[in-house]
Each structure stands twice: as structure tokens, then as C-alpha cells.
Length: 249
Ligand code: PEP
Image (tube, rainbow, N blue to C red):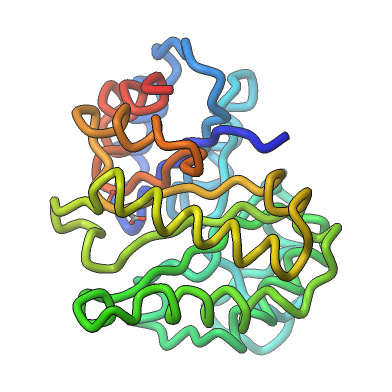
């Protein structure tokens, strides 16, 4: 059965001292929901965060990785490097990676393969832009993103894949998809998975929503049957707010 998951994406925020303060506040929180909890610090603080949260039920995950195993890729980090410090899960395909670093679906497919080869879990992000939604193309865009980056995989690979639907127009804008818009898209994504891999794989795959989830809207979004959690940006930088969201299940 699929899991409920709440993951915090800290993006390029928090130096070491700020990370330490946030980690210490996170350790004071109490989880009352059944959701799995993850946080994604920046690379420089990844190992520190991993060590600090080792004894908690919060998993530390990476924000990105390269597809190559090693070699002449200045500034990049491989799956093997992440694994060597204990990281088991990586976010791939975030809209900021797609927009600012030109990550296309074929590049993401290579990253997905590299992560799976190392038996890592993937939070795979995708979502339409406002113009796509306005022109009624949002389902087609999302379907293409999923198909082109993931549908070369065999069904068993999906035990290591978590999907994160993040409409670009809702990320960091304060504008959320309405709970009904989220449910509609999540049901469409699950149907797309079922058509390709069968209902069992579709039912067992967690689909997270991301885009301006906050303590005051999390409960309503998470109450939708096909929404299995959230990928949280801004609100995850405050431990109290983040855990209000975690406990919204
Ligand atoms: C994100 O970056 O994945 C995100 C959803 O950000 P925010 O919650 O700030 O909209």
C-alpha cells in the first residue's frame, strides 16, 4: 500500500549555522501523523544533517544528482557519492532544475536510471506552467513529462519512485492549486500509471502535491484521496510550520 510522505525541500537556503538551528528545532518536534518525513538540505550540509537526524524518524534526502558515476563533471555529485554518506533518496526533475539548468526529460531519464542502478529512491517532480493550464494543455504536458522520463522503466522499478506533481505556477508564489484541482490531476496521473503498468502499481505509488502548501491549507489538500503527501518548499524552512504540515494527515 502506498505511503503518506511529507518532504521539505530547503533549496539553496541555510548556511551551516542556520542549518544547525533548523535541525535542532526539527529534533524538538513530535510526529503525530503516519506520514514519512524527509528533508533535503543543500549539498554542503547534507552529511551534517544526516548525522544530526540519524536517531530520528526524519530521512535526509538530496535535492539533485548527476547521471554519471564519476569523472570530469566539475561541480556535480553522483549517486554513489550520495550513497557513501548514507543518503538513500534523491529529488529529481524539480521545476527549478528544469527551468534554470535546462534539465530535459531525456536528461532526467538518465538520472532516474543512475539513481535506480544504485537502488536509490526518487522523488520525481513534474508539473505544468500557467500557460499550459490556461490553454487546457495541463494534462497532456504532465503525461508527456511522466512518459518521457519514466515509462522506459519496468513496473517493479516503481517501488522506488515517488511522484511529485508541482504546478509551476504554484511554486513559491503563494498560489496553490485548489484541493479539487490537485485531486483531479492526481487521479489523472494515477490513471496514466494504471494504463501503462496496471492498477496495482498505480495504487502503490505515492503521489505528492507541491506548490505553496502551508499549515493552513495542508489538511484540506491531504484529505483528497489521490494526494499522498506534499513536497514543501518555503514552509519547510520553519520547523514548527513544517511539522504542522506533517501532522495534517
Ligand atoms: C517546491 O519548491 O517544491 C515547492 C513546492 O515550493 P513552495 O512550497 O515554496 O511553493
